[in-house]
Structures are given as structure tokens and as C-alpha cells.
Image (tube, rainbow, N blue to C red; front, side, top):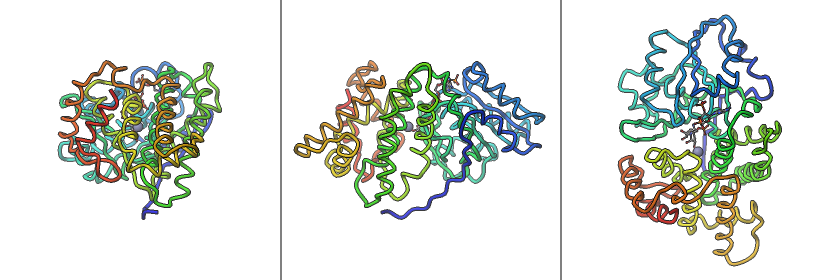
Length: 385
Ligand code: NZQ
Ligand code: ZN
């Protein structure tokens, strides 16, 4: 097992009706800014519920945070926080809103150009305004991690940063808040969470047995609950399991003490930045091809994955790996995510554009062994056409 430090300070309040518990989590004298996305939180009544739970506190609102939140929009929120002397931020939404709030929290007291915080991967973040979240979409794990992904329209950049200063203080996880999600977003969430496990599991073995078993448990649960989680009318328990799996998939637990990949995410972020493809859909496209191209270095884990997740126990190694990749692609397709670039109207001409972006963002050595060079990324994209 690799050495590690693990600390996750985010308090989780899970279950029906937990929005009412906001009152006990935020200082009564706080000047609160509620941040949200488009209209979904208002339409579903969640925003009203939040405002009611906050009682007599001074409340301000900032709406309009986009899916794939942009620096440009978020800087307006930073100005508002500074102007109104806000001292507590509350995100109401999915990963985009929570990520956006993390950026705002860190940018408020930063004296330089806040984009530097993103570009430097978060290492310049010295402090952040306290914040919590009310989660309305199960997918990213942002509700219990210190990661944020911000886009900049001006340069078509989409970059991640992380800092221990941007863990949410608490997150309210009421699975019934996801009942208003369109099927497309539920499916995205399933695939995003599954991919988060793969990024931290499908590398090479380091005798991290409990991390492997946790990771396998999360993947098996996702496969088991996916059909029910997609059903209408929504099933509470299926949505509750999806919510908790997605949180655990990227809260640091399964990633502690193991090598991690994340190349599918990095290539995927470029596809979103250039072509506005939903985050999870970019993963559905890139990941099967990456597993195929990297089958040599990932061989031991691919065989373990095939055996323990898909019951593939017979045949030559290569045959078993083929089957495991086909099963993964099939799972993404079954929940409704297409897995080829051509499904998103992208042909070979897109490849050079994506590679250029990767080079600009210094994503030239990626993967758990730093061996995913631009040439390897090219092969991954060619295999995804
Ligand atoms: O904007 P509104 O109107 O709220 O609509 C949103 C949005 O259009 C809608 N939605 C959310 N909750 C809803 C709802 N609609 C109906 N009912 C509800 N209860 O869903 C749409 C997508 O929301 P978004 O927050 O963008 O989705 P998601 O949670 O998948 O977040 C994606 C973002 O997170 C980043 C992605 O790159 C992307 O920018 N990621 C963040 C990570 C992290 N912080 O750890 C890791 C991930 O790998 C990922 O990169
Ligand atoms: Zn993701």
C-alpha cells in the first residue's frame, strides 16, 4: 500500500427532510449568500425550503451558475460577497454549483487575479469563506471533497483545482431532492460515479486490499441499482443508494494509498470545453478506449476487475480484458450514454484540436505511470471515434 494522509472534515446530514437542519449548521448571526444554478432549485421548491430554514438570518441570492461553471459568472459572485460582507456561502445544486462556490469561497480574499488559483491547481489558496451545500444531483462527489472544476469561456479552458480549504463544512443529502432530475442527469451521475471509481481502482495492484474491496462494492452497487435509479416515479431507496455511492466514490476514501489515473477526466474536460458535451458523456467516450490502449500497464487490475465485477473467469488474458472493456461500454450504453465520438458528431478532425488543448494545459504526461503522453492520448482518441 502507498503511504497516505487522510482527512475529510465534511459533515454529512443524510435523509428526508434534512434541509430543515440547516438552522443548526450555520451561525445565527451569519450573513448568508445562497448560490444556485438555473431554475431547477426554485422550480422544485428547494430554494424556498432553504430560505425558510435559514429563518431570521440576512440572506442574499446569486443564481445563474452554469453547468460547467464559468470563471466569468463566478467573478460576479465574488464581487457580491465582497460588497455585502457575506460570511457564509450556501450552494444549492449539483456539482457545478458546489464547484462554483468553492471557487468563490477561495477567491474572495485572494489579492491577485483569482484565475491564478485555478491555474495553479489550488496550491495558492490560503483561506476560504466557510460554506455548506444542499445537494440536488448525485454524481461528482463535490459535496464531500476538496476538488473544483472551473471553465473559462474566454480561453475555452476547463481546469481542476483542489485545496484543503475548500471542503464543504457540511452537506445536506436528501435523496428526494433528486426526484425532479431528468433521466439524462440521473444517467450522467451513474456513469460519472462509476468512472471516479475506475480512475482510482483500475491502475496497478499495490496490495491495498480494503480500498479494492470498497471500490468493487461501489461499482457492484451502481450496476445493481442503476435500472431502479432510472425508474419513474423515482424510488427513494435506489436514489439514496446512488447518492451515497456517488459521494463515497470521490471523498478520498477509496483513493487513499493507491495509485490514481485521471487521464480520462483530463481528456474529457477538453471535450467539454471545446464541444460542450456533458461531463459524464465525455467519460463514457474516453474511458473504454483508454482501458483498451493501456491494457498492458493495467493488465493485472483489468483481470481483477473483469473477474470480480463481471464474473469473467475464463479465456486467455487478452480475451478476458476485451470482455471486461465490452461490459463497461455496455453498462454506459445501457443507462443511455453513447460511447463513441461519432455519436456526438465528432470526427477525426477533432483529435488535433483536443491534443492542442491538452498541450496548452500541460497535460502531456498523464496516468498512474506518467506514460500517457500526447501520442498515447492520440491513440485513445482514435480508438474512441
Ligand atoms: O442549473 P439548474 O437549473 O439547477 O439545472 C441543473 C443543470 O442543468 C440540473 N439539475 C441539478 N439538480 C437538479 C437539476 N434538474 C432538476 N432537478 C434537480 N434536482 O442538472 C444540470 C446539471 O447540473 P450539474 O451541477 O452541472 O451536474 P453535475 O453534478 O454532474 O456536475 C458537473 C460538473 O462537476 C464537475 C464537472 O466537470 C462538471 O463541471 N466535476 C466536479 C468534480 C468534483 N468537484 O469533484 C469531479 C467530477 O469528475 C467533475 O469533473
Ligand atoms: Zn467525473
